Image (cartoon, rainbow, N blue to C red; front, side, top):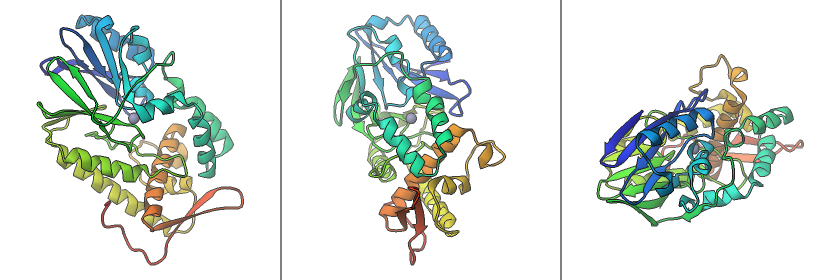
Length: 333
Ligand SMILES: [Zn+2]
């Protein structure tokens, strides 16, 4: 369960019960003065037990331990509130930290979800079951905001904060230039593709995500340490694969829209998903939610590229159609 990656850098794989992500990678960097934990897991007893045991085994003094969360999702920061002792640094990208503090985001998200084709009952159940609500921190954390170029030093390691919006608005990767390693959070994953969703009228997270991928691909990287699943040795190859994946997804959406004007839940239900279920109606509601957010991110990207147009129906639902005369999308740039 505890694996030493480099001297004083350990990976602790924390299982996420009944979650398709399966587990989260929590990294522990130790030094004689302070330790740093990069991402925890959900605030769930099973996760708490695994991490507590690991800290005990490693004889980690929590009074000398700081915490960094790559982004606001509860599977990365849910347990920081539990472990952080008074005086500990708790780092998060400024943009995400402000979102955590501003709870009005939920309301806006729900309004947008109802305009995307979700029923009222589905929405109520989605809020109740959303991991952000179910497995969020036990108390609010006073985040130490970080941004582009900020440095966190632990022992011999110098971690540079790189703003990488896309998966969330304020996602931060940590780059160690001497060892050429990147702690990539959910920005770059190896075995699964990071979920890119939009739930507002004014964001284009897929465009931001592409720019953030290009930013990491420009670095000299030997090893990527992601937030989930296995480590990545060829960073540029993985970035290329992720870009190609989204190009295919965009063209899949364009193909689906050939059948006529539709809302985002309809588009999502016609896309292909790597989920074990007989049909869209058998998808667990939360998976329908994430899939629709992902469909919306592609629709928004295509809309801004001039391939798709959007109109509001008389019952306040957003409908998407193909713009005539456009062919297929050839690149994500
Ligand atoms: Zn995430």
